[in-house]
Image 1 (tube, protein in one colour):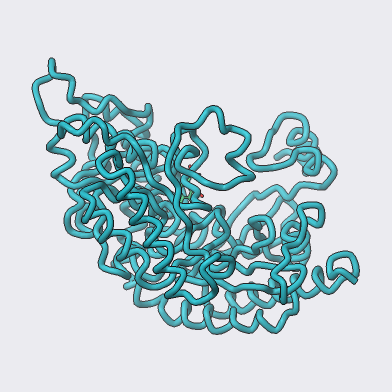
Image 2: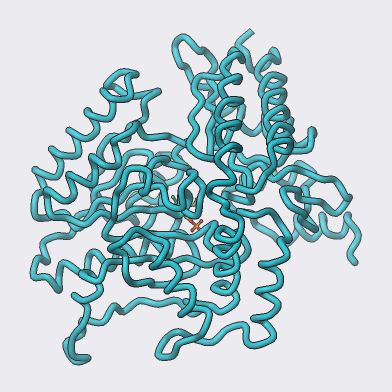
Length: 456
Ligand code: PLP
């Protein structure tokens, strides 16, 4: 076993961390996780932290869950990986059947990949090629929302719309038409959810009319825009988008990478508004947060458009080496079996109600501007001035400071600029949730009432 200091030295010397300013990283002592137990992450020094963001929004049943461990172990004794290009495998078939059964009716085929971004790339490419097969090759434009995030590969970034992340790569990205997101707290249409919803839908409708038969698809994150700042959509927005997509005969692509697998309290966010997309992307929680696995589901109508003679090149020429990996698929099936065995979606309803109730207490903190919550996902937006909604500046790093304060109190978080994200494993108990919320509350209080950040 390597000692802690050697690990720190090697980390600093050899690793480049994602979404991390490495200059800051090098100046601090890193937390190095060694084990997990339920909702706890345990570092090399034996410190325990509540996993407040479910290890980048992936973990479902807690860490080290016996049934998933066993499924992976059983699978690995048979085979870890063989290709899905030209051949098939047992876990990939079983999971595909299960996914078709548990997604809304009308999603009939499963195309695997490794992560959220690739599931989105696949969705975009399928939509783009579909229209060529349907004799409408002029449908090339994707419509997306402001503040959208769909991953970091070039195609997924192209349909993303977050200044800080995407501006640098402008010249590399293909053009899309983006429309306002229903960000009620900061919308030009005022602060009434219905008014904001109707405004955004009108703008979308205008766009669809303007580009009419050029739109290949509309892509959105249903109910919550995650990395954009946990922006929750007003009721009826998703249904409205579906209606507009149907009226303009274009495809609706739902990116359920973050919202899927129970995060919103239903298996899929689209179920809340009885919406059925043409294409659905899932990843993150799909394998229970264990292994990199993603799936893009489509209707038979889309799938059938790709059928034809080999020489006619209607094939979907896309694939990743580890597409349909056996270990990932076995973990995912075990994950979904636990949902069924434990009636998990019913079981978490009281936890969700408790989470939502307790989060409202955060409004008693002076620098909490907006609390947004959907299922077991929440964002607490901190502002310098509540009256004017003036944000904290990047220099103040308020989100980062709150997370550092929480870490000292035994909770691991990851902010989105000034928004504190809360996304615990779905199986968190009410007492663990209380512990998490108490720490986040006191950390926000401590950081924002300090003289450096409160404008005093
Ligand atoms: N789509 C959504 C909605 C996401 O939240 C994310 C990641 O946060 C992605 C796509 C990208 O997923 P990945 O990081 O697995 O590529």
